[in-house]
Amino acid sequence: MMDWFGWHGPMGMGGLYMLLLLALVVLAVVVLMRWMLGSTEDPRRQRRTPLDILEERYASGEIGRAEYEEKRRDLGG
Image (cartoon, rainbow, N blue to C red; front, side, top):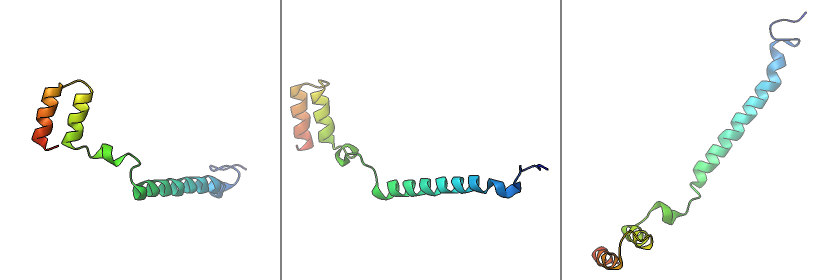
């Protein structure tokens, strides 16, 4: 006769629990590897200097040449 857990009783769910455990182990390994290896982004993009920001503003046309030159001298670049 079939009971609450199906034909095999509570042990019939063992395969499902093993798959869940395997998925958690794989997830833990992936998270650990990403943490150990750090970010894959370009380090220069993470730490922009004021001169980098000034050059970007000039390149985008936000400021003119005279203002760019003045601020670059102020920054010592």
